[in-house]
Length: 476
Image 1 (cartoon, rainbow, N blue to C red):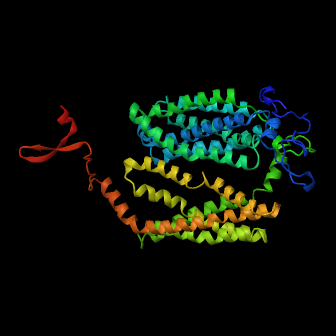
Image 2 (cartoon, helix red, strand yellow):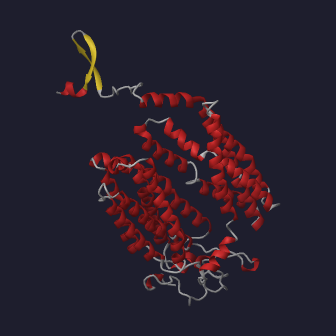
Image 3 (tube, helix red, strand yellow):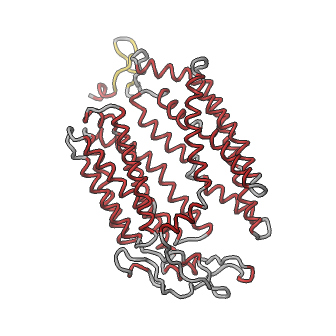
């Protein structure tokens, strides 16, 4: 089967007239037992015949997609890195500056289903090329907006959502059509690792480029240039793989798209967990903030203590949700609801803690490192780690669907124990938070001047005694 870049522009990528996919039972390039009824898992040779791409080319495509994902989150957080300068330039307050992100997220949220629909039916490579090119032009244009046209900045940030929606909804599906099983999990973990790195780089690049250029506008002109490179890489390197071919049974017909309403009806059956997560997120954040606000009146350590209570309280419920998964799905959802509500209590509070223990001139850098470290120690590597533990457990058991379920169930229980460790860390934070907050306040008020660095001074004899002088004065 040849690569599908021969299809017309924005046409359906995979050929509906394709015959049975190579890799049938008994032929090289497949792993599985047709008699057992379990799906065949193609090996590298089988994947190459199915997709028409060599393993090296497939890995190169993932590398390009990771680069664009990195760029995607860099652009999203570059604005945050120069937000004080934007406020000063346009003479706006905190509410208006917060509206910049609100407009972007709203646009991104509304457009994501649109590109999801298009990505399931048309050539994904060209959709991403067009979206990223448009996003690059809009971002570049936003750096030339005059100070009396703040509404135009809001409009451009909303239009940036076009590019991000076109990419974020489509890129993971390309990876899914290039790899299967453990290979897919590994590639997706690499792809999403770009989120924390890109977020942190966006903060750092935004503030540093502004410092070097002496003008915050230049911070918004970095990612458009890199976006041009991304479009060229997409056009030259990425090839559209046939949809679902790597997962197709040898005797099953090619996959054809259904109507959008049929898609929505089918997806609605899988959205219970998502609805629970949305509801518990809103409930948990509001509950955590309100409890902390009330407790602060009597206990200055209320913030870390509420976070600790939320994490320590969520751990047993998350554990029970996994333990009951096989026996009662209703009990599982109830425990998930309680556990996620408690888990969500710390989100807004952690952001508040970070801001009041760090002096204003270092808050963007602190936010950057907090984003990098939280993702690095959390969702960047945890999917791969959990999958690795699950694979290790499965190797010691006879192959069956039950063993796969048990292996993943046990490996996910690690999350509950990590949550308990996080609660213990917040208890430790409660010991030091008063002193850290007080020092940051005194420093911000100019009552606790920062000690001057003496790294650039040396001790020399002068008039019969030793004194510290700058290195430059000695060299001169």
